[in-house]
Amino acid sequence: MDSELRSRLLEAGQTHLIDHAKLLSGNALARFEAQLRSIDFEQLHRLYSGHESHVNWAELAARAQSPPAVLLDDPRYTRAQARQRGVDALEIGEVAMILVAGGQGTRLGFDQPKGMFPIGPVSGRTLFEIIVHRLLATGKRYGKAIPLAVMTSTATHDATVAYFETHNFLGMPKEDLFFFQQGQMPAVDAETGKVLLSGVGEIALSPDGHGGMLAALAGSGLLERLCVDGVRHLYYGQIDNPLLGVCDPEFLGYHFLSESEMTTQVVRKTDPAERVGVLAEIDGKMSVIEYSDLPPDAAALRDETGELKFWAGSIAVHAMDVEFLCRAAADATSLPFHRAIKKVPFINEEGKVVTPPQPNAMKFERFIFDLLPAAKNAIVVEGRREDCFAPVKNADGAPSDTPSSSRAAISAQHRRWLEAAGAKVAPDAIVEIHPSFALDAEEVKAKVAPGSTFQGKVYLREGSST
Image (cartoon, rainbow, N blue to C red; front, top):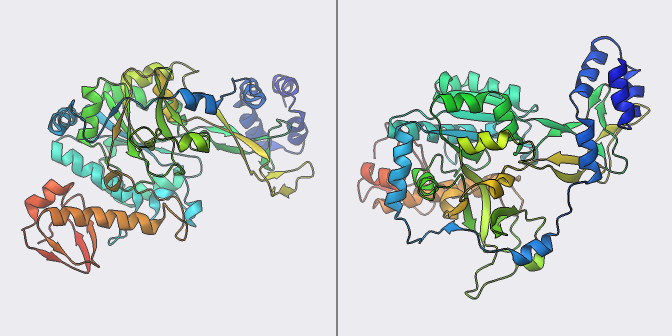
């Protein structure tokens, strides 16, 4: 080990890493030293020591107000106005999509990238297929291809790229499809601050959170490339929501009409204990309070009409201006790190793997919604839960957010589209409508004759006769 790296480790109090390096040689040693050089030990010490100010969430919640919002019955803009404004931007190619897809399906009992999980209630299409097919159909409708940038992680990148290659990029033109990896941060021992080792010559690393998207997008050169290509706005969504309203022109239109630099779609909470963050205005700035930080008594507060004070549940859907993101990417402080105590297996000084029974490590993550306070005219736009949010997070048998509940939500939405067109759908029918057949209820109405009947497993796609 060279003297410069040794000095850095000594100064950082990470002498165990020097000792570990003595066990390595050749390529293994070179790789380990490269990992060490990539770590900002001064930053790591600041994060571990908690030099960032402590947040009193109960005090913040007490002075929080309902966020600036476009509600479902908002009188300021008609849906037609918003939709047309969004259509205008899509037709001239000003919109691209960011899809956050770095997670694995561990909680689903699925040992591959979550995007490869089959979720179509009839077709068995994967989450990737559901979302990409909707993006392609949206681009076709408005006569302009919509670029897609997929954020992967170290754990999912190779498998994700291989999946797209094997499946002919799901129909996406190669020039409109990009992959980039989110960053990683070392995990440290919660008691000592020492960097943990996941194996011989391996630092214990974990993804730096969905907020790592900004640095990764800028660092990959994609942010600059999209700007050069004429993209001015990004639609951001996560892979685990098959009801994602991909580049929905109405949502985008509200973003434009409000002259907002960052807009967030929300659904109305009815259960104070629901495990979603909430949007609120604090000291004149839009903010998100994570469900784990919101005190239960604050979460249960209601206004004079009986509605929850903290009603605006975040579903991780955003519209963001590229110029705003460029500005934020140039500011190293724009996205702070958050600390989380987790269970992280590690190897001890004897080189033995230790699987801790209790949380033992500190991880560091950034959240994309922390950009909201810096955004001009940040607003939330309310969506109907049944039309925009059916996440797949837990294996069947869990109380919520399971594959079964998500498939049921997809089928229920598509059933509503058919019934709105005057069709008769059997009570036990399972319905799935491919975006190549119809993107919404209006398109279904144009293709399905009133009085048509559907039963059993119904799968309508391009070329289907009704």
